[in-house]
Length: 503
Image (tube, rainbow, N blue to C red; front, side, top):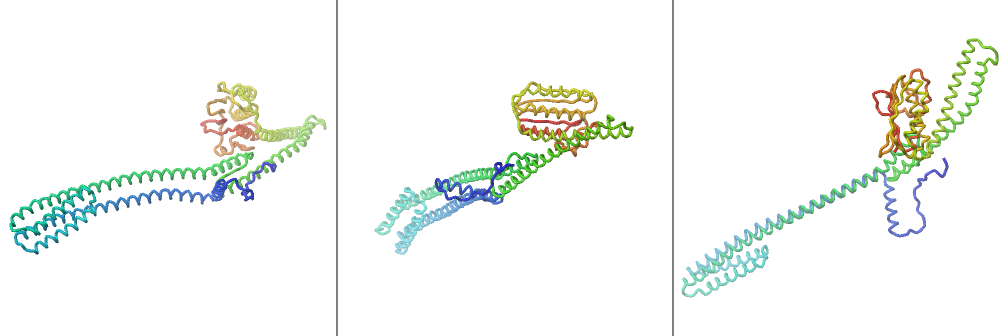
């Protein structure tokens, strides 16, 4: 790992260079402030903002309802006061008329004083009504009422000798006063109706306002929730992706996590782990390569010595000695094949990331791979069925041929004599799909999770066949992942069903 490939996560330090503007400085300060918060603090801030939005809507609704309730209560009080005052004015009018008629009949000054007291009380009542009913029409009625009362007082002041004539003069005046009282009653009722309508209109307006505020608060809460959710979950997604790459032994991409401070700190730790694992993987590969090369020379000497003994160069061998030499030669040959497989795996694994993409006709490529392995599957009495349509894709043809060959060899190795191996190739708008299905014993449930691990030997082995090195499917996965695809084992009632998908 070179020093240039390392990613530095040091926190920004203040510099003495002048800022371009106050606005940009404020934006940087605000961004640094958000980045300095931990995941828990950001989550708390998100809940507080959402609660503030909904709480503000609730507070506004409470204030609006309280305002409407006050208006309704005031309207009820005004209606009760207006009704009482109109009734009192009618009673004062009746008292004035009674006192006036009694005065003209009995000629008692106390009755005239009673008239004046009732009249003054009626004026006070009119003033109270005027505060509740300040319309011009009502004021004109009060003025007319006062003129009629003044005219009645003048009659009482100068009744003359003909009391009967004075009584006749009072009758139309009080009839007019009673009519004015009835008109005031009607106008008072209309005024209260208008006040009630105004309260209802205000209530409807406040209802619409509250509905708009609540909808706006909910929308704001949703937007805030989505924004904070995206901002908080994005680094978690990056962490999950980074951990997945580390689990797949892909150490080529650096771990760069943005967001809250604690998640960025975790990202830096994952980046350190990636670099450490990449170094260990490089050391392991180099060690295996060196030790394999070191083993090839003595192993070749052992095989050559066994061959010389078998050919009788050192003298004739007894039957037991010949059997020992045969066992020595066979096992040294098997050991050399395993060393060569190990070297081949590391070479392919190292070279799998270097793709040379070009347009490749896939059906022809698959048919060539099947034809190259013809001797292998015909020797076991198998039938290989190819189901592929004419299609082409931008892939590395050589490496994809290795993938198909490894799948086919693996299926042939585990298929019973007379079995069928089916290879299907399909291409659609999403990408390329390759299926390999055999009639073998399938993969044990305990091996499903590790079937693509290097050098892993499954529990279900082909009867009578030499145990493989366990690197074929590992190479398949390396090449497919280099193409950006995936390789997985699908559930199957019989045999093994491998599927490769390349976007």
